[in-house]
Figure (tube, rainbow over the protein chains, first blue to last red):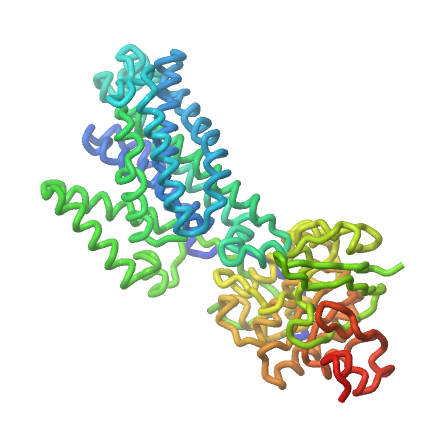
Length: 358
Length: 235
């Protein structure tokens, strides 16, 4: 063992063979998805838009709960505020819907600051309930905002959606009608947002602050004693999660083109489903939400005709997964195969160490 | 001038006062031991110095700089690291990540690096990819010590590093102390195991009920002195 000091050729890395293959496969998949509208019909593009936006919401909830240890059930606050800010930008300020999506992210970020201020005083289940209450308050406030339709909601002005950036160009390129071009545009934006979210979260987790984040989740006091500013890490995670969720919310409502407070602040649509996706896929992993959203979409398509039985089934599956595989399906897969597509664990390679990796 | 001092240090938990004017001084390159029975205030003293508890700014100084009012994450970068009581490893991190995170708040070149830690505790190199909590108590203690050393601290606080470990394991852990001393770090060792503490310390402080009751070099006092300072009664 003493030979180690003579050969200091150690390199700390998170890369594995599987992760290198993933990187190549991800680029190929991304390219294929970008080109998909050339061959796919409008129905598939709309379905994929739904899958991609749910994936973004799931990744950010997973960042918050799975990595940051903050189990929020109030993410609909940021979906709703993002969506309403986009509507406000279009209706009240006459901005094009596409740049107004950014406004949605910024608005979610801004409302997240007072939200965090209150919610961070609460721990565990109280934090969860607190975030939900705050989201309800925002729903009630938006229901009182008559300029954006009040309780019954409103639609994007026809002129704004018709003349939306790039739609004319896409309509010509694909030789489709304006409404189909809008679907393609929002699909591309959802794809870009999903890819950017995963890349950004992965980069965060591989960086040194990512390590600090895990430490804070495990033991805030011990994290402080190694020099981690635990409070600041919580703020960073909460605000970035709100920003991403707000962008996704705004994008979802550009595509829907119609908003109401009950829909935009729906705890079922924007938090319960998202929780389901993350939990069955595997909380605390980047792969988990990806698997989860695919399963969620398949279940939704299969059970579409069964009404409330659909929700019933989701609930049972969720409970079974929690009991049988608490780390989700991806947890089962890694336990069996050891594969990690997005490894964040730092390993030492090189040197004269000959022990096997366990 | 001493590297670290506490002057009239008081600490409270709500209405309960745990420390009543504690004065200690640690000189450069020195190891001091703080002994005392349960509830004497040893851990409160460590928590105050490391910044887990906040005190009056001037009550604690490090290299002449007042640090009493700073929090743990502000103190670590100044060169003071703690091996906390109960080890407090991060369960979701591997052994190696537990060590690497030791450099989070303070990354300075010095004697201690991953290689140096693995040299000090070779068993950790073998277990480096295991989750931190999958180790035995003694190995976890080694990780906790290594994690604190990774920041190359000027002062290392060791709070009850023998707690809950078998005697043979305690011997292994304490075998590392002279190497840590040789690296130039100054140590404050808090112990209930007086024997171990006396062996490694240059000076000893004995505490009772939140006060220092005895101070001196290990060979300067008798068994009876310690007994009186420890329990408040003569043997």
